[in-house]
Image (cartoon, one colour):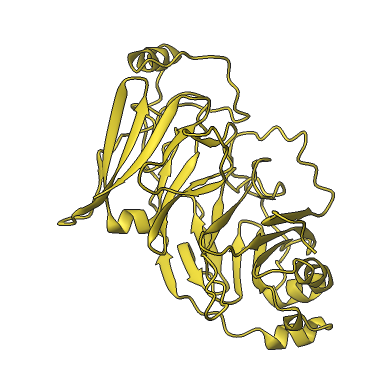
Length: 361
């Protein structure tokens, strides 16, 4: 059974060691030829016994996520996320050692690649609804038919491909749903149906950016009162984001809220529309973020991809995307992985450098 208070259980497989991972920059490796990948069915059957053992022992409603290397056929890790009453739960998948499901065998994955959000548990139906969100990566993720998506919502099994990995997302909590034999389990899996989907745009992140010099970055930080210290983050890279948006609104759309970022005495407010907050707003100092660091989020204590602000049900949540220095509640200095941005909630990003507040309209 799961220990009291544990809402995420992680099992690393294939000899992975996340203690000494250096987390080099995201990069793409291209090979002249690769062995043919096994089918989803073959990978499921090959690893079913281990998946069944881990997920059936989780003992509570939620989601089990099993990652399998599609070329070697080996299980790389299993993540179990509890569906909580009254609040959402989440987990991060990627190549950074701070992620929940740590996948180190494919250098084309982003350090923080996906977030999986489990909605509050529906006590009436008992159904577990969850959402998979791409964190603005170049590759996004694919379903079984090869279609690329930025986001999918499901209430049953979901199978996707993320880089060299296949992720089997399987609801947990019902011990009778795990037959002894893999063939019987595969025969019981219903057709995968998406409640919502957001297909990826293939060229959406091919933006040019100007690389700033070290002196320019120091001058920019000094302008907003940031004292630059020795780098703490494990990620090394240039800081030159391409733009700072003051609004995330569609044409003719009315704002549903305002994101207020504060560093020192400088405040940056961003108008947000319904589509943006539903899709998810990414904050960090990297150029693929929606609210990037060209004005405020420039310190290396802020991760390149630090926080996702997203609507789940009728509430807006902040999800820490496995940042190096964490996200904290300003009121009681408590580190949080996911927190509802109710009125009056202030968050601190990194080492007391940036503060965030969501103000609904």
